[in-house]
Length: 296
Image (cartoon, rainbow, N blue to C red):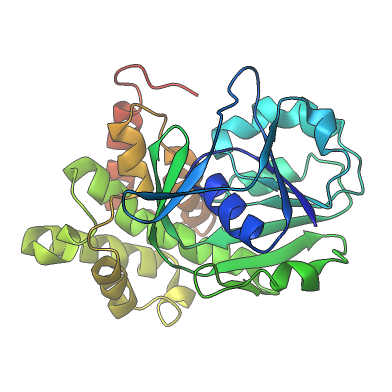
């Protein structure tokens, strides 16, 4: 398959690296003069492996793709709207954003086939051209609109290091990830600690449990589908990871506060539920987002 990837951040590079290993032709769309000579993945820290790919700066170069992966953050999507509008309607799009707000953005698009994914890998940019794979997680993909006739071909890309599964409940999967992100990201960012500290420090663990309990009170149907033990195990399994929100904050980037935390608070509001602890963190994070030269 010919696969175009818009966005050469951690997840974009991760997708490009593993899909290229399965002999797919990978094109990264980079805007302006941002082309880099070579791109790399570190499966082992400080051991970079080159990613077999091309980089293009004209959206027309993606007109022949079999699939286009949208791997930019939610707040970049609006800037890409004009480019997406001129793409051929028959090319399937795959969105891999965190949070929930990109679902409403997708409604504006004219593409016949659109898929969305929930990505549970741990990954971080080491520098402008290298991604480090920190932890293996499942990529769950579901079709939001249309029919994707190359689903089987994409599923064959699943490997031990890059497992992929298809689901008919992708929106539920996205919401579960949003809940998990609400538990981990705000607290690690405000405290500026790695994930594991949320359960190693008793005070932090009590705050984490308080957020969990208020989420479960608001979304009662999730108590059995997202247990406290699962939250604790996630912190254990990613104990040395820094959350994506914390990493964005530390690197002066705009954090995904609205699409993750704000969106879940809004969903609770639809049920006439309030999330006082989470809402307090939301307001704090909004203020942190204003500090320094945070940019798009």
